[in-house]
Length: 276
Image 1 (cartoon, rainbow, N blue to C red):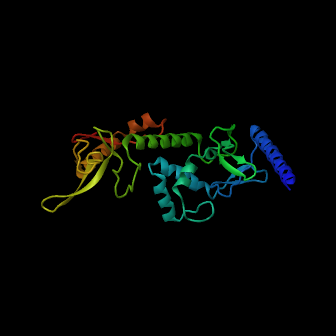
Image 2 (image 1 turned 60 degrees about the vertical axis):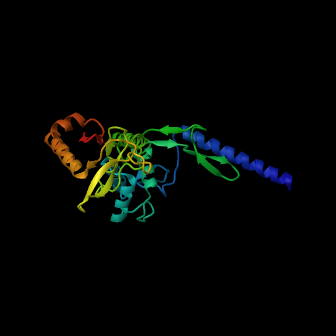
Image 3 (image 1 turned 90 degrees about the horizontal axis):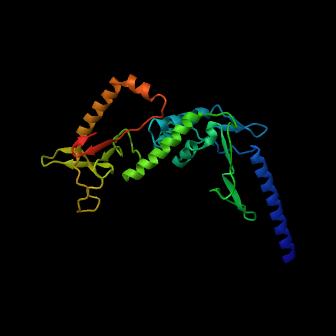
């Protein structure tokens, strides 16, 4: 029984190695097949080549547009669910991590990165992400694109910029609910470079007011950290309206200077009581 088990295991290893060799040879020539069961926006034809699903295509286009308009994936998820937008299996439930993987997927610009994962154990068939352990293959213009290469590259730059923004300013969210709290994570302290947080204060006369204060000011209870002063929300609204009106008045000049670049996101730095 032990001898037969050993022979069977060796045969299984041989079959696995032969299959792996065949797959990698196909990858080297740019040939591949993939399942589109959980892949929104594409189907496969009789040869296994990716073809655009015209019904799902507008959903992918909208996702990229909403992200470049400044929304985060969690907010886009809520929009899709509220509007009943159908996902890959026909349901209306979405995951923000799924939306982010769609934004990072090079197949939407017509390219294909092959051998993202590989089998580490031929007996258990366990697979793991390829982080450089074995060779990967990149095929340009493998199929028809849903998203232009320029827009896709802009989205990758925006993803990196937002990640860096979170790290630099000590916040865990790039944006909250824009309709109720549009300044969240957008007001930056000019002293310590951290974000301002919204606070509800009540005056001695019983009047409620909203102010913005550096998140480092009282990070430790009872101990004052950053010495920068708070800012009234009304002041921020006035500053925003002044900045917006200036943009509208100079929109022609701004458009001509920025039409060949990706969109830039702005934030304000608060230095003392001045908003920049």
